[in-house]
Length: 218
Image (cartoon, rainbow, N blue to C red; front, side, top):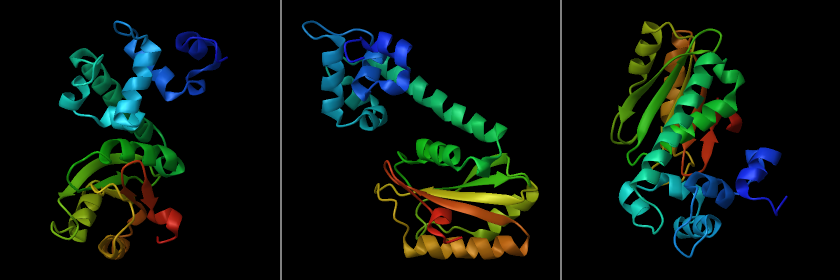
């Protein structure tokens, strides 16, 4: 299998059989002078440190690497956006809380690279299907007040039976603070008064997350 070129390897064994540099080589398609596409792919990943860091790179840093340009940057942004939309459509079509991995993947894709802290709420119907997602608050939990009543008000307006909370930590560390736990408890108490369940609260870091439900905090 190791002797196959990435394209042939993918066709024979599936995309999951390829390592990061092989996947990137398929994306890049061609190398540059005196550098094969596989050599270029390995150099690019070594430069950024990981495939995730490459995908997160802004245009300036991406295009500064020899062998990469605006065309590849645009294509990569389009691929990333298609992934986000695929995951959102999976949520919209499925029973969200029976697919916690899809929920987590979608939230990580959307939130982990935001430079400011944002607080999202997924509003679900009584079968835990997604009604809508909404960015409720912007800032930090300490400085930009998260108002439980606003979340509950929106839940009642869209006739939601349950909600999933999520916010990011721009520091990259997903460990919840005491403020995170306190506001979650307040939201849960306010929601329960209106018979709205808080199913989970995801704290998203860089390549990591914490689920309040998995921790047994909800």
